[in-house]
Length: 284
Image (cartoon, rainbow, N blue to C red):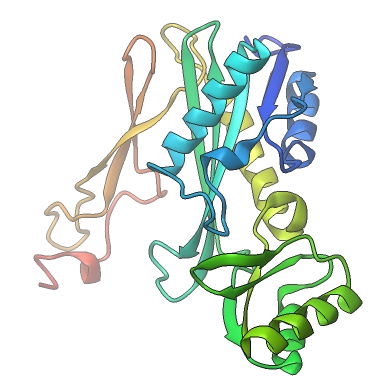
């Protein structure tokens, strides 16, 4: 895959982060596009929401990424910005499995172009628990991968009056936990999902960056604008038995963000017929 003729080749990329996400994103940009990566000093991404809840995120994850991008572009006079936003909770289809849902947004203000990718991964240590003993604290922290993966302590789930982040080691965790238990009888312990304190999340962001690089290099066959991607998924794959259309995917429709050129890609799942067990006519 050729990257040297990309409009992004050897440009300055500003990464709108205060949580060291450049450690996952920058290597991909440098390898693929020979990019010059800039991390703004003093940029506060927490003003758009925190995982611990002191500042509530307003709007969707993509809305938050857009706000970060615009704020960074304005404050640092940048024309090419990458912003990131992560969410944690139940997997969208595996409901009882926790998931890391990452969005990377590239905004090219010079060319009036926005590219976004999403990666949903079950590779996460996301967890939280109200506990009442040091043994429970230790069990939770070990399962979370502490101290390589940091944890956060607070009085209770929705109480932010006493909250401690950036706990560095087991001695510090034990000392702070004792104080919480002495004062409140229990404490709420949760995984720290900020990227710089969560190597597992950082690896998912790196995967998302690889996906973004592919999209950046996917050009419209008509006008050569980057970001030529699936814009519509069309069902109708015929049943192999009755030949009637099913709800399974028949084709992807790729759409250009600039000229609106459309291109159909049939049978994206590498099959031209569906099994009768997935046919509402054969198996109602």
